[in-house]
Image (cartoon, rainbow, N blue to C red; front, side):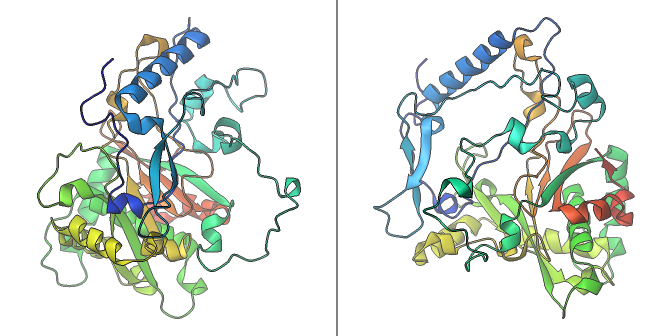
Length: 386
């Protein structure tokens, strides 16, 4: 199959990509295979399709490596892998008794809880990375200045919540500007603004209740946005690449959990989004160009998550439920999930819209806050745990 024009070369990275998180998302897509499925055939379909995609989109055949020729420190570049360096699709058979905590029927009946998707079982790392195997290194008892300890902690858990179309309508009504406690010129908010406001408040409420915080700390809410919609001149909305940007509404924690209403928070979010106009990408690119080390440019909320701050990204426009994979793979996926530890510590994910118009949120909190999350009164007025 011929390569698509323009996609047959290794692309350079944009400024937004150079400062983006250096990692990858371990998605989990449950398929219900037909009763007469052939595991080898299903794996063959995936391998063939992936290899064809690699030929058409060269970026799928690349790895990210340090760029020694870059003017700035911390920059990576894409480098084509040699054929066979990395296996594209591997198969792990978990059908044996005890290999997986439940069968597919039970998994589906329970709405695919992320607690079932143990990261070490279904997304095992290539190597175990055990300290005892490497006497040449010492694990220090403290984290050097840079990443906060909580961002590196393994005591993080994910939990999916379901919002029906009816609960979303009630939530948007409650977060309407008519319920604001302060004067505002912002008269319209979206359903996403309302949902984001509830999510922000809930995560802070369960992790930083007022009685546990010192002084009057401010909560920063980094909301991921699509930079494609904020360029001048405009680019095609489906342009390939990582156009990840952030806005950052903020409010004192005590005010958020005290006098502020959901409407106040939704308005802050909407105002931040409005300010990110068509000069946003160009301005961030200019900022990136001025620094010596791109690793020094981080979303502000990363400085205290999980904690007083919060980070949200959205997969809502990923039309994953519309993709037809063919009869050998059960035609369509039935859920979008992550592992039991969530995606990134402190990250909240708005999942793709469900076929019935409902929405799901993957909430990530510290393990000892999970029970409080499941009983947070305002959150559970609208959300249903899955």
